[in-house]
Length: 320
Image (cartoon, rainbow, N blue to C red; front, side, top):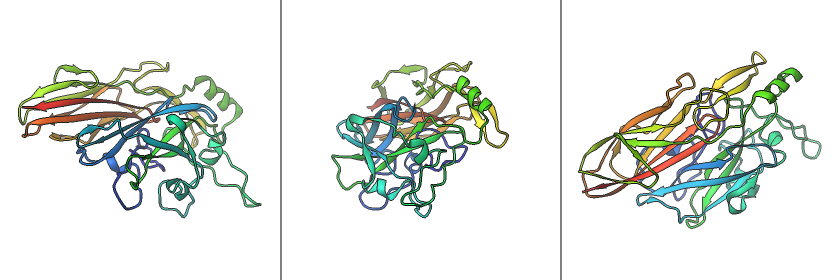
């Protein structure tokens, strides 16, 4: 997960902070740096569509797990942040979002991006309040994108810290000529969520599959996604056009892909693997080693692309 103020190497939709009693919410990138699911964790938030225009609705799905596996029973309470973080604030979003004093609740996990998202969190300037100067426009991420932040709480666990997420917003091109704007509008395709497939050794794993293992058995896990060989919409590492503010030209890019590997027991050789935008290989791999103790382990694989797309797959390993 990347910080809400992201570097050019950051990937995907910013997701969960640790959900633990006490303490301030952490930056969203922190919670997937260990593969072990040893407490309740919000692991991913998927928006469908993952990129929306101001006023366009998107549906959010939340992946929550703990030591027992995926927790579909922990209903998420989702909201968009309604105010931009002040420069003096150290948190990744405005404190008014974390304390729920300035939020837009999402009823049924569906919400339209606010009409002013490109002014509040994008390249446009909103008028100042009560004669104050207008605010500074936000900077784009490394892909040229802008994001509506939000927070998710677990209603069944009151008192836990919120997790954070973002939805990519389709905004304009500050400083671009009319010719560039027209060319961008003709060529740009909003992001699609990727499609994820997972293999254990040579076995394709459908969602929810259970496989048997002996104590300490190792499996080669491979995550794959479709190849994207043209600018057409694709469920893999999509090609897209971006505006380069330094040269004020349009450049052709490809999404980078990152996979987060997680499990409730056993060990994984890597927390995260992936492919950068210069590497078109549509797969990445790691090794899972089953625990020594008998029982059932849940393994979760989360795929993210650079423009905010998310996919995940879960399976179980029964150790005898």
